[in-house]
Structure formats: C-alpha cells, structure tokens
Length: 438
Image 1: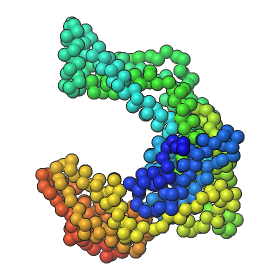
Image 2: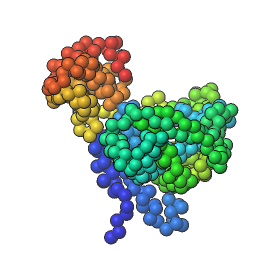
Image 3: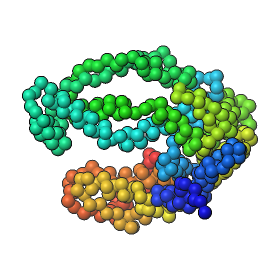
Image 4: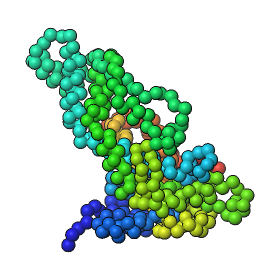
C-alpha cells in the first residue's frame, strides 16, 4: 500500500495537542482539510481540477484557540500563513485595502519564508565568505603572511575581535526612498521599484564599523549574491497556490441584520462579503511577483457571532465556507490544563524567564488551581475572553517577583495558593476594580 507524503489527520491532531488544550472538533476539521490537499495532489489532473479545498468557518468566543489552531497548523506543515481581520477591508472602489491584498500579503510572507529557508541552507558558505572579507579588512595596509591571517582567523572565531574597527565597502541602494504611491497602490499596479534598477551597477561607499556590525552587513551582501530571487519568487508562488492558508478573523463583523443592511453604508460589510466570493471560490490575483491562483488556498474564517449569526452572512458566502466548527468556551478545568499541559505553557515560560536570573521557580498544584479559578470567575463576571484572561492573572501574580528577581538569585521560590490569593486579594472579589484586567 502506497503511503501518501505528509502527516495523517491523527498525526496532525497529535501535533496540535502539544500546544492547544481541547477543541477536538476544530482540530479534526483542519486536519482533514489539510490531508485532503495531499490526497488532491495525488489525483489525475482532470479530476484534480474539480476538487477544491473545503473552506472552514470557526464559530466561538474570543480566546478559545481559533487563531492558534490555524497558526499552529501552518507551522507544523511549513505552509505560508497569513492572519487578517475582515474589518480591515473595504469594497472595491472605496479608500482602503481591497480583499485581494490579503493574497498579495500572503505571497510576501511566502517569499520571506522561502528566503529564510535558503539562508539556512547557505549559512555555512555565507559565514566563510564574510569571514574572508573581514580578514581582508583587518589586514588592510598591514604587513604579514599567511601565518598572521591564520592567527587573526583564530581570534576572530573566538570572538576576540568583535569591537575592533574596520573599513568595508558597503552597497548604496539605488531605489528612491520616497514614492508618490502608497505601498498597496504600487503592489496593485504590479510594480517593484527594485526591479527597475536591477541592471544598474551598484555604487559602494566605504564605511567604518565594528567587526560585529560589519559581519552582519557582509553576510547579508553574500546572501543576496548567492540567492536567485526569481527562483525564490516562483517557489513562493507555488507554495501559496498549493499549501497557503489565510485566516480571516472577525468575519462576524461583516454580518448584519436587516436594519443595518437597509440603513448602513455596507462599504466594509456586505461589499466586502461580495468581494470575498471569487477569492474563496478561486480566482487569479495579480501581484508584483506574478499571478496567483487562489483555488488551492485554504481559507479559515472565524468569528464570535454573538451580535450576529452565521446565517446573517450572504448565502453565497455561507456556501463557500461549507465546513462549520463550533468551539466551546473554556471551563475552569480547561484553564488549569492550559497553564501546565502545552509545551509552551505560561508556567513553563515564567520558569524559563526567571531561570535566566538564577531563580528556581516552582508552581504548586494548588497555585495553578487557584489561578485557573480566579480567571474562570473573572470570565464569568466580566467579559469572557477565554485563555487571554490567564495572561494578566499570571502577570499580576508574578509582578513583584519579576521586579525583584535579582534578590532571589540562587534561591528556590515556591508559588502556592496562599501566595496567589495574597497577590490577587481584593481584585477577583471586586468586579469594578477587576475591569482593568484585559
């Protein structure tokens, strides 16, 4: 039996479980959508054209993991990813960003991702080239043979020359610094000013800087010389078309009731919904790096839908988001698990932060339970902002210790329930006072 490449849905869910607590239905939905991409690539070309990504609509309150699921999904699959807010866009013909600009932004993110990957592959060669140029600069005008160069190389690699001053020729940019067009306007016209000056010789100016600063400049120059930007652009566009993910948050802000529809302007609501239709269905978007077909891009939309319902969206837009997943609010038990179970849990982060100052920080089980209880109570009493409530509760608990960490260097500090209650005294019980907690 032939095994398709990539992660299976079960493996994707296991990877997501390492960072996100609960929300099994949403994890399964994105895992299946991701796997269907791999299955689609294995189909015959004539059938492949008929199979489109099944875009997803996540419905749930803020802070329950909608964005994190999409972001982690892109990370574990190394897919180009972009998060946008639906309220940023306006209908075509009005001042503001049109919805096609999200595809152009995704291409830019993909180019940066591919360039960073190539930079890691070429790191050793770039380091060697920069080292030779630094040695040339250090030996400029000085007498000495190969032995002198070798001794300098040893000192350079040991970090003993980082503050030494050298003079190196630095390239001057040719592209003009000021443009009469906005960035979005130039992008929509498909113009890249750097391409206009690509054939001109690059002037150089000698600059005096430390070895530390010169190394950065020389490595960037070496990398620019080794990279083939045309290939990088082409690979980035292929990655966007085959595995790109766009997460559209606050989609519920585009939905409106009948009264709003009759009397509201609709410029950034129903007009944006109409403009989203061809993008989600599949269209060609012109970018300054080339045309991009959106048929293979996975769109994950999300919203709380408290003031509006998914049915308030245009029927055509609802049809282009066929998979709907409801994310449940976080209970006290979820908040307790979020504090400890993920690999990058808040307690793990604070232990690592204070360990840099020599503090051995320990969170007792009852302290974690107390913080989860306070966060849950505040979510019930005030606005329910999900796991985000834990950030400020933790910061309040750790405020004094973080401020005076140097006084506890070399000590073991245990945070227990009594310490938590002391730091949060009067805060959790007074609703009006607690409103400043975000």
